[in-house]
Length: 277
View (cartoon, one colour):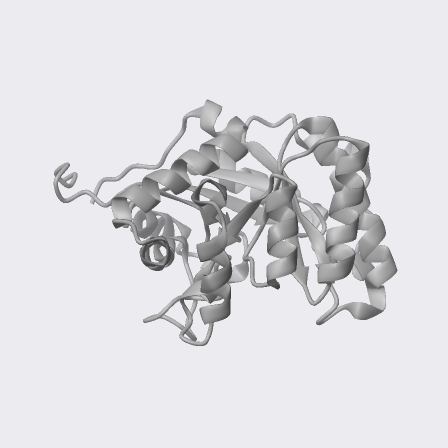
């Protein structure tokens, strides 16, 4: 039985998850059903190694409301063939392929591959410029180089971008906003010790905010320390509403409009999951 309009949760999009990861093996139908019951009617499943793209594509083709993006994660750059612009452009022709990445810079775990990461990031930027699809950025302990490369790319040609799972410093946040980019709020923003991250979001324009899980990682309380899943983006949205001083329904509606604006291909596709209980 479907919930009545009065009890139905506000619709939310989990703009970044990893449904192909082994953490969800054997129970993906149940995971997606729980997400739908929580109001999460769309999910973008991110492929982090291009050789795994066929598997992630198949998930999007199989499940209503699931879209996908693909790229080479910065922590995988040293172990994977360098992405090619034409390869990413070719993938973008699939009707449910809606973003380029995730790509970016990670000097916390992978500083030894910094130069290769920069090359990879620039190639992904070029693919985003050519396809018109949003770039999906992972940034960790690389704020200065990240700001420089993103700004350099914008001087060459315009492109759209989301700073996924944003937990960097205020300068990079402001640089991203100034470039017209979006900041995505993950479970990190719900952690008790993440007040600085919440303050950064509070200073950002509401029309540039998305929500995500990055599941299976970074589960928000009360699930912290356990596997995250798309349903829990509703818990992050609740904290986001508090950060912006809004009712949950209003914050959810704003992030939905933001997702539709940035991920216009997904919005045009129109597909959403069922909200049946």
